[in-house]
Picture 1 (cartoon, rainbow, N blue to C red):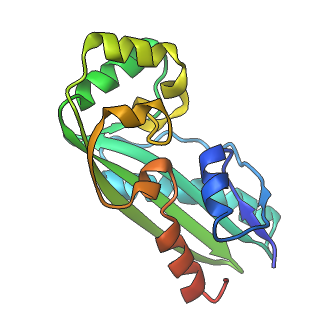
Picture 2: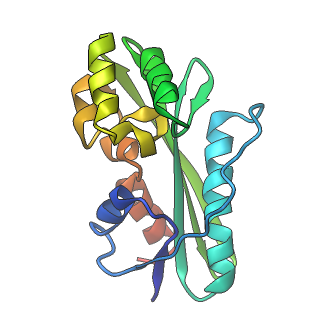
Length: 186
């Protein structure tokens, strides 16, 4: 059986390798804009589906796995920062507060879709302006939802995680494995 990860994220690739050792990576470059009036859980599921569907049409016999991760604080969706000023704004919003990281996952096989979302609560310690500035200078926040990465230097900002840490990194592998097994695809 051919598996395809419809994501260019090196973090998702690493995590998926823990349950599926051999798969292809094909990225759809789907539009990631979403109506702000849509609930965050629904939005992230729509984005995951949007990333997977074009690949599934090209490879109808493959199992296509796509995902999208967002950070939500006070009902505001934080995607990837547009620039350094945007990253700084987001990190200030997260400082000293609890936010949610939501990953939507879409599995498409043989015209059947299974879409789910996982939410994890993450609490940040209070961040100083200098800590934020130095972190942004590393470049790490620029390609991550909410402007931080749990698997890198951003981990030093985290005071507490309530839920699946792999979800925060970008792929809830336990839920994904269980879903693939339920679909008889693993």
